[in-house]
Length: 390
Image 1: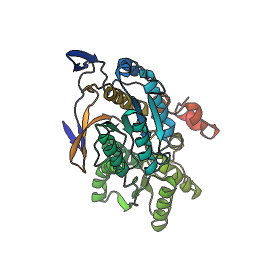
Image 2: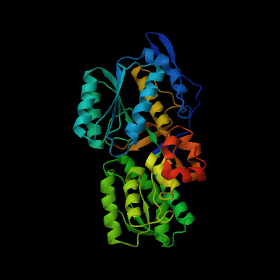
Image 3: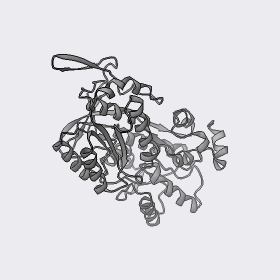
Image 4: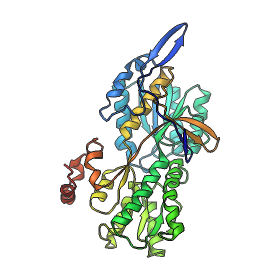
């Protein structure tokens, strides 16, 4: 087992094994899936229909907001819905809600779901404070919780599912370094930006790219000019960047942890007359605007996290819990440390990928995450032709 920044990644077991549960002397076998067996056509979920039939109660998914990333409405909600439906749940047996950025709403949604008969919660917490409240309430009512995408520090969840978030940050850091070289940026002067300090994922992302950049700062090859407080609010990120650039005009590259925060920064740089392939900016989430900024030369790349796979893994875990079955070891392929309680959390950790212009067609377009028809509007027709996006 390897420990990386609080993430203990174990080798996957065989995907052919099945879990068994003995009840009243009768042994039943549950179907088995692995962390690597999900595909973008959702076919793996159809193997879990017997779990759906055996389960009791409903599954309630509560997503955090529509600001920190557009992914929660554009991708997570529809993919989770499709995963549950493909596995055989009816519309009355699951729900997918969004807290719209309100801690109070997220807690109330969880409490209401449990009152309405939810037997499993899947929660992407707005922050660890409300996440811990939800998990404490759920535990007192005998309802298991799955932390989805974000870990609740100090929580009591049964499972955590996400991408290897230290690796996400590592890809961002390496992507910037590669971009600085390719774009021939002399004497890189960096603004190192971070996500919200209340989001444990943001901490892990920063841990990843800080580790990549630290030796370059130490050697003097790169200069870390400024590192603002951090946010997942794009207008605030733009303000942080504008203030940094005004105070330090020498800044000529920026580590930005997601596409949503990068977009207004790039727009601002354009208003200053910054040309393409001149000012390296990073991102994450493979959003439409992120992909367009990448192919037009204003963003180095983006960390692509196939959310369809994450949604299916979360739905599968929820189905095992709802049916009272043990999740197979091949699915729960790792462990993550809750640094507040110093406990190991059983985890499903998926693999992210760094996407540059040449990889757009073979990744996000091929997977149907962002259709070429949306990317290749008139302003980007030449870029799409250049990189074979169709």
